[in-house]
Image (cartoon, rainbow, N blue to C red; front, side, top):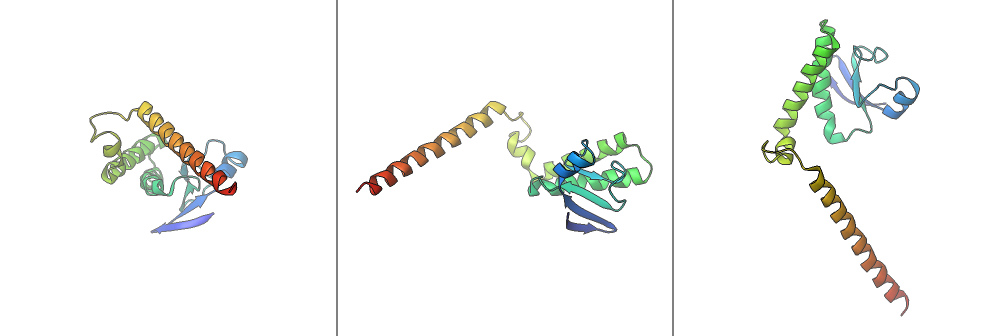
Length: 141
């Protein structure tokens, strides 16, 4: 566990999510808080260390809303929905969704993503082949 920030009385930690899923709770996701997962201390929020650091602030926004509502007695389903809404709003403000959806006019095309990944892989392999050939030629002289 590593402390990443403090929000009032609440401490936010990164935790080994794989360990938690394997030894404590297979339902633990990317993040959690006490009122959803009672084994988390009341004034702590946990974020899986495997989560992309760029995603942590989105998860934190979600968790703070969820924690506050459940502490006030709201059911998990209602708190989850409000947390999701807060997370989506923060993602919109960050501009990530707009870039991927051409300002909300379309859904990202999974095929385009895969084509780009394959293209990047092919370019990397071609570069490696050129470097290997150059190394072989230099080694044989």
